[in-house]
Length: 258
Image 1 (cartoon, rainbow, N blue to C red):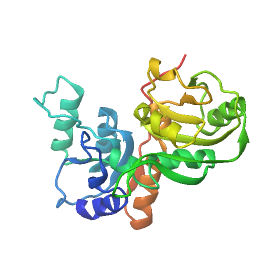
Image 2: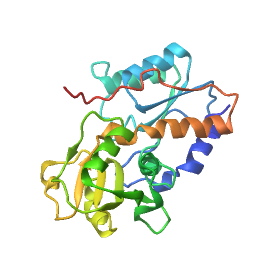
Image 3: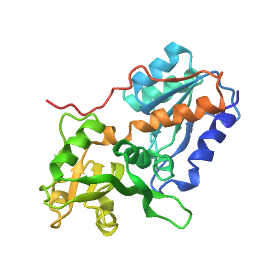
Image 4: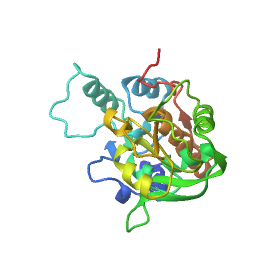
């Protein structure tokens, strides 16, 4: 199997052209023309994930968050990114990130969030002229009170807690959402007719919301983790006999709750 064969499947689903201008989706380390014996999937490219790939004999890593976001000025074993680059190069491991390219497509991160809540008539929240876009919005299968929706969100996203703006006393029938850090879409969420917007990494001032509209912070990791299963299913469907594995350490949310 060649790397380019694997990436064609990924990029047919999540084209690199869809990514945000500030992002760095694609192949961070390695060549598309190289061979590949097996793929290890994870949400974040950590040193532990690289070590796992080495231990399990996987020579390609695909994650949601790219290992390299910005220019690398030096490569040193004294920091984690440097050690990852050195290990990956030494063991011939190719590393690929499908970040906002997988956020902005139908069937991607935000659509997976909508599926968790069973939303109907799901649309892209902030579409562009090419049919891609961040976030989704859709209708709940029935009307919910604020408290009922809180319970539903905690159940479906497996949360012990969530952060929210002031409770609203209106029937909730429409919900918008964006995986990861989506506070920039709060205005679009209100304009879409949603009563509630779900995302992660919400800052203090964004919790001051207009009457009849609420923001819920379900967490960055919690809102995006489904993309790993999506990519796994995509690769196994196309390459049923090829070695594709999800990391043994998938529950590696760097945020802890006490």
